[in-house]
Image (cartoon, rainbow, N blue to C red; front, side, top):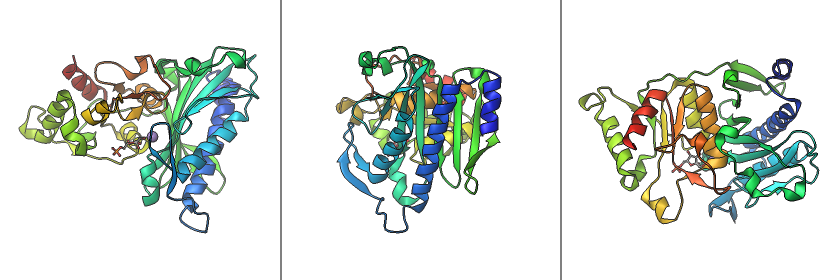
Amino acid sequence: MQNYLNNLKNQQLISDNLTLILNAIIKSGVEISTLLENAGIGNQNILGSAETENVQGETQKKLDVISNEIMQKNLLNLPCVAGIASEELDEPIINNNANLNGDSFFVLFDPLDGSSNIDINAPVGTIFSVLKNYKNNAKEISEQDFLQAGNQQVMAGYLMYSSSTQLVFTLQNPNFGVNAFTLNKKTGEFLINKANFQIPQDTKEFAINASNQRFWQPQIQEYFAELLQGTQGKRQKDFNMRWLAAMVADVHRVLSRGGVFLYPQDSKMQKKGLGGKLRLMYEANPMALLIKNAGGRAINGKENILDVTPEKLHQRIPVILGSKNEIDYIQEKFA
Ligand code: F6P
Ligand code: MN
């Protein structure tokens, strides 16, 4: 990994500061992965609920809170990190130790995505998005400065804690592509295992939580009905379904072999005044950049997710992403 990053630096594809940030995220990922592996043994008592709620009113798991603390500690140690924002923090934290004279950045993250999977030893992950800070006085930085559209992300990615721990990341420059690295647990080194993901343009696989069907918008109802009709309907092919209940793992599958992942708006969430289930700034945006740089697309229905101007840090959004031709097909239904 370090040789790989040095090569990128020599080609001026990644700056020293972004490399420091990526290394702090990698360090956090190794710590979180070790915690997860050992969570069920010993007397650490770190499984289960923390009996607290995050700003979104969701009950936090102990490991959500601990993973957040690990990311927070490692990132705020870096002078090039102007501030952080997290699913588990109500407000962003501005870094008092930051040096804002050179390039500095905001790191936004979901420290433990898919946390309902923790207690059943199923895949979970850490999602991150990096944006530039344009202010050189810490006192002037506010939540507003974090509210940049996804196409301004300078780096995005995730760590997935599954049968192996993998890092997948991309940079703003689409020529960089999307690459995956696997943690060698003996040496603590990440080794490249998949260079340049290319999502097939067509697919026969979809992922959606169909228990919400009766609450979906008509466009999604119509699309889903066509998928289920398979060869007997207008799509003229049979589809397969997968749902891992962790966005990281479902997106990893889409990157690896194509497919379409949907978490559409539904009337239950609408009644609560929510724009969708998934969070724009630290779930939808980073995944949308990865998918785009691997040749796929990510939309909220009508629009590209990466073009959406955020209004709030914890804003939610419908997410429909994956194989390009399938996303084009769905988008037409919203036209
Ligand atoms: O972060 C939200 C999340 O856990 C995603 O990782 C996942 O895709 C989704 O929610 C699962 O939702 P549901 O519980 O409705 O299946
Ligand atoms: Mn999540």
